[in-house]
Length: 466
Image (cartoon, rainbow, N blue to C red; front, top):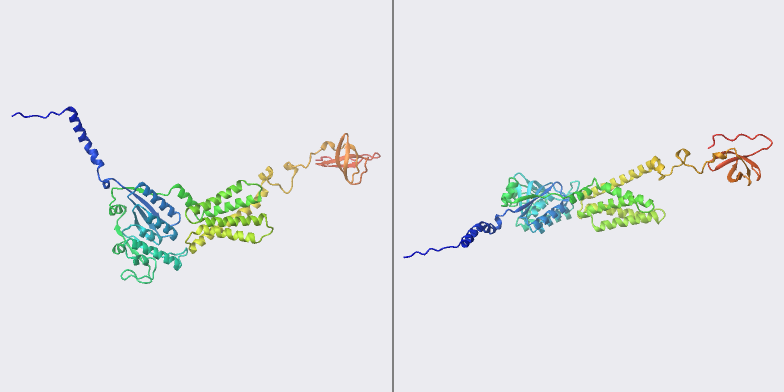
């Protein structure tokens, strides 16, 4: 029996070797997507919840969606802040097409609790607390029932969307709500980590690594979100300490421009300052177009009162009222409390004080500025010859010369000295035309003469005349 052996060509052997080499590559391409490292974006929600924080969170969530991130985690540690800012953040979380989770890193009070409950899942560090979400004004007084009711409904809606007991969320806002075994009537609900776990509101974790483990994202790359340069600038210009300087510089520039001809540096600086003030407040949602229009109408009425209508009347009063109302409303937002109005009023008072003190200082110092007087920008009360001012050329060479009065000097007239006509003035008496006269002194344009008495010696002319 003959045994047949298959003989393979070198090309076939090479093809098989190539196929074996490609197997690892094909296997890596066919790996499940879950085995690939994902991305987690960590967003700090710390300090006071203010209007500058809302656009930051909105931007980070949008960028996380565009980058295809696996999750966004809000790292919350705040005692609360503005309700309207919290509502913008919860709206951004609700619209997000990427999972958003909340990590309560020690405490989430008031607006912070609302932001936490808007997330798909709440994770609390051991020893953390969450709650006390009753809205208050700047002095700590409970807000109006209208605002309390709105926030209570918002908290109830978010808890219902997650399948949780809505009474717990409402009890964080309204102390009149009692939950047997949890909180009694008259006390506002604030829960610890363990209480939140027992109520099904949170998952306990030890630290940030515990958050990733609870979300099964241990292998993911973590990106720390940070405020960009534009958001820093906006927050800087809306700071209650900086805003008065922008307003005062704007109004000072416009006042100087109104009092001077044309349009120059002062007006440009004023318009830029006001644009920065309103632009920053528009970007963070505090100001609206109606506020800017109201301020513009106020400025126009004040200008009409100054330049067109004499005195001070209805145009001036209406303009100032519209201006102040627009500036206040541009700083308080859509859901203001008493504290917001107090802060806005403080900014306006500070701006008015700066304008008043600066104007008073300029009015006192500028007239005495030697450099400005020397350059001719400001004229002094007098012009001295020592400073280089002369009303006419001094003709000291005329002193002592004898001429003839060609007009009557009563006491001023004209004298002829050689071939030159010179304006002269008699020293005292009336001098008739044709009388011989002598120049006694030259004082700028004033040439003092005296008649020449042919019968007596002439008095000596004044020496050292200027």
